[in-house]
Amino acid sequence: MEKILDLISREVVKAFQENGYDEKYGRVTFSNRPDLCEYQCNGAMAAAKEYKCAPFMISDKIAESLKENTMFESVESVKPGFLNLKLNPEYLAEYLRKMAQDQERLGCDRCDNPKTIMIDYGGPNVAKPLHVGHLRSAIIGESVKRIGKFMGHTMIGDVHLGDWGLQMGLIITELKERKPELVYFDESYTGEYPQEAPFTIGELEEIYPAASGKSKEDERYKEAAMQATFELQHGRKGYQALLNHILEVSVSDLKRNYENLKVSFELWKGESDAQPYIPDMVEKMKKDGYAHISEGALVVDVKEETDTKEIPPCMILKSDGASLYNTTDLATIVWRMKDYHPDEIIYVVDKRQELYFTQVFRCARKTGLVEPQTELKFLGFGTMNGKDGKPFKTREGGVMRLEYLVSNINEEMYKKIADNHTVEEEEGRKTAEVVALSAIKYGDLSNQASKDYIFDVDRFTSFEGNTGPYILYTIVRIKSILKKYQAKKSLPEGAKILAAHSDSEKSLMLELCKFNGMMENAFQETAPHKVCAYIYDLANSFNHFYHETKIMAEQDEMVQAGYICLLELTRQALELCIDVLGFEAPERM
Image 1 (spheres, one colour):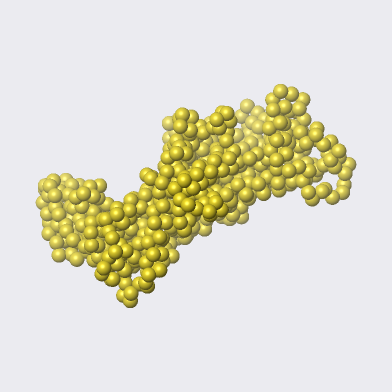
Image 2 (cartoon, rainbow, N blue to C red; image 1 turned 90 degrees about the vertical axis):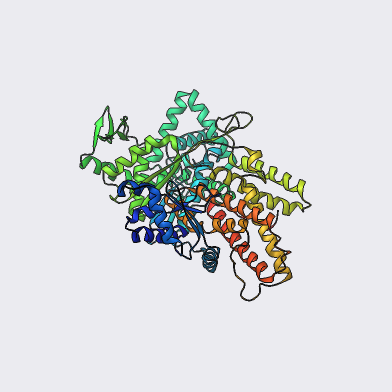
């Protein structure tokens, strides 16, 4: 279904052409002065220079040409040369009726050329609990994935676990000190290793920080951990069996926490999955003449002539031959290209890593790890801060566990629901979880990803203003009206959205018809905040219409049915949008 702006622009472009002007001047935009008009065209201002006349002389001609066009209620030429447009209410209603016929997508076409797009949006380390620092990557990445799927692309989310390197050696070393009798430490052991892990997730989460603390104070302990890491990475079977246990226990816990956020991944790959690809990759970089030794390390130069700031070489191997994050990320690109042939890979990571990913992307391109047409995209996000403007911490000053943050918001939400309504505790708590998730996700996603933002619990959990609970409250209000109507009667034959009876009704209809253009734009710009901005405007327009219109008291059966059809379309648009944002609405609040 064509976007409303394209349909309007086509008519205005035709008018420009018929009057002898270039079609490029006929582009129409949404009005930046909705008090004056609904759409605007400023092309006459630019055309005046080319055609050597006053802008209003052009805009007057265009307005005259469009005067009889049934698409428009009014077309005004306003000095010095603006075109102010208002849609015919019947034309607008017909557009919405076509949207309503497509209940699954509301007229939003799938893309013409679907892509395979991989998204790297997790990055948690195994053996460590998720903390608030993991929140933005998970929430933004999940929404980008859902928007892409809605637009018809094949989206593949990869958690990209941190399951390699010194942290594994530290865990193995600490475990050996505590339980030296375990068969994993007996190099002469040739039997089958136990299927059950010798630790719980709780023990594992205590083991790592204990080991990390010891390594900072005891040089011999650190050396033992580095040796354990080396032996693990070079195939010692007992240590690899322990790694499998660590992964099994950690991933189960990570999945539970991500599920609580309604975040999912198609792939649960880790840094360890990239290791088999490293030797051949490094050898090829050397053979092709891209990698060379610099100060003992193997590097690839990635500086370009147009650079305005220093871009250091991308280090592939350290002087001792050990691999780095760069090596693992490049080898991960190798297996992703080999197994999935993605058209695009998006990395949803902290914006402070931009230089690092510039090095990695340039290295991947220069050495031929990706096809020339494969896009590598860095989607850097800002910091989630506390009210003091500093990175969000616990009251004690530590980094808060993510499940504690979610639990705290759930509790805050339950208190508000219980204070305002008589509700059974079980239902109240379930509703609180749904609304709390909207508060967390909308609070994050309503900000442009690259911006820092203040995580304000009081504001995010409010039922008023630009918040998730306000959006859900609006949806629940619509559901309640629809239920009341359905309990009394069925829609009469021929019921449909009618031409607007009031300014507030037309404003709501104008917001609804932006849906497909907005969704397309949100995908193209990798911008979930545009979905948030849309549903906030849509919710405001609906509530204004609701307060001005006696929907259930309307005496004219067909007019009332038209209102109900309009409400149903509004509900569908809002629920499709919150679905791509990664949350849902309860039946009542």
